[in-house]
Image (cartoon, rainbow, N blue to C red; front, top):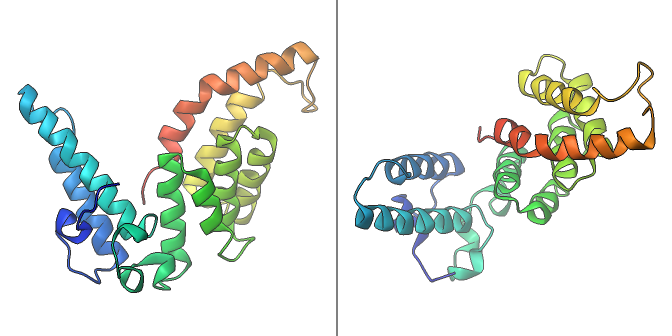
Length: 200
């Protein structure tokens, strides 16, 4: 990663809060997102800018802090002790980026057993291909927070993907159905995570 000034790229002050960084990031992504520019040259410039914005954001949430000397004491989130809420936001973002090891590492540092912990753990497991374990954690999140719409919608998508090929007892009818299930789950995979792993 090139040495950039992440604060300058996102237009935030040094020591900005996680919420301020998140807001600036979203605004910048909106400004330069694809589809806004028809000219080829402008599209290329916008794409380069988007890459810089992404790099800056990852630095400021603590993923690549070594690229900015002296930044360690100024980072929000887990480096500045802003609490579990910001850690969960970071985990969501890292899952969206496909950085599952980093997401799992942050999740290991927060209190285990909460509804959101189970939900995010379930998403990580599902994305790794451990479907049964992932579904179990998301089911636990729903049981603990039955009023949470996001948890319920995610579980509903999983159930629709996983159970059409099972009998009423929940057990596979045959090994052939297991193979068919796996293929169906993989087709569902991208759709599920586009819908469930959005920023809060």
